[in-house]
Amino acid sequence: MSETLGGDAPLLSHLLELRGRLIRAMAGVLLVFLPLAFFAQEIFSYLAVPLLAQMPAGTSMIATEVAAPFLTPFKLAMLLAVVLSMPWILYQVWAFVAPGLYKSEQRLAVPLLLSSTLLFYLGMAFAYFVVFPLIFGFLVSVAPEGVAVMTDISRYLDFVIKLFLAFGAAFETPVAIVLMVWAGFTTPGQLKAKRPYVLVAVFVIGMLLTPPDIVSQTLLALPAYILFEIGIIAARMLVPGSKQVDEQIKAGERE
Image (cartoon, rainbow, N blue to C red; front, side):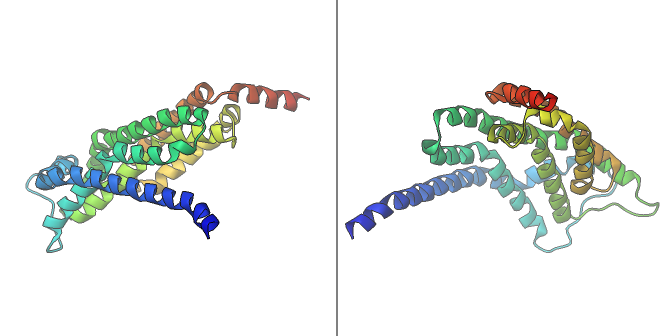
């Protein structure tokens, strides 16, 4: 009986630690959400600026559901709280998994966690300040004559969230490349050889993740490809031995 309890003790302690980390993460999100909730209307108004700036004079956004004017800004405030709390959430993840990592893995994980958070924020900022004005300007300009552009606020929020996630994920490309090289799935040299396929792939992904217009597709594909090149450079610098592996592969091909 004592042996069984002894064997279960490590698992129980890990589960308790996981529960504690989850509670801390949720508490952090809640603390950020509470002040944001008071300014939910203002936050949504700021999010709507790129569209409203492109709409014809005298038009506005609409709400087709009774509770949408109240619930949609609060939904945005909650999502924003999760985004702003991401460093705290990732810290809780790190604190849980770090004891089980080797020293070399810990040295690699810390810059990857920091850079992934920063890159996701940069992707969202790029979408808001660069992509949104161009996309909404294009979509409003192609509206048929006599059609009033009046977007529902709930559908607008869903639309911009999709774009935020698409560009945030696209800006994670260097982190994904470093992880793949570090795990041994590929090498920087092999990735360089696949450049033409990657260029086609980013345009296809841009077509699937963005609205059906060439502007937004290109604005997602080009930064993603540039970040692919940055990821190759970062992998050579951060992953020990990657250059030697490429040289061994080339030597084997020559033989």
